[in-house]
Length: 173
Image (cartoon, rainbow, N blue to C red; front, top):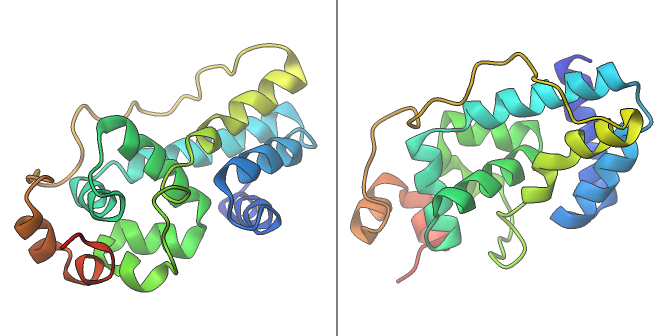
């Protein structure tokens, strides 16, 4: 599976789910079980590589603005959601997290920003196809610390300065 096919699967299942992260995960599993196990592993590698690539302090800060704070788990689930939004939004966020202000439409923190189940879709599909747990994908592990320079997510002034566009649209007053 190449990168284009990976994103096509993400996009088609998101569109069919009408943006609902839980439905998206269910539809993604349904789509993946139509593939052979090796293709599911390829999908999992693409997903995991992007998940690790988004492990950045600035992406975490953007998540904190959108979610009104972001714990370790919330950031993990946010990265899954970010991948689920498709290539343009994902790449835009990794390149310039403040650009999410222009890339995403409405954002409801009760529904958006948390797609934990998407992160398990390939594992679930692989297990359904083979009856065994997904093997090691052979990717480097996620770094111990996010890439970039850490900063205080609880400091609204720092968030507003670092992410002016996001703060203007989604920040708390």
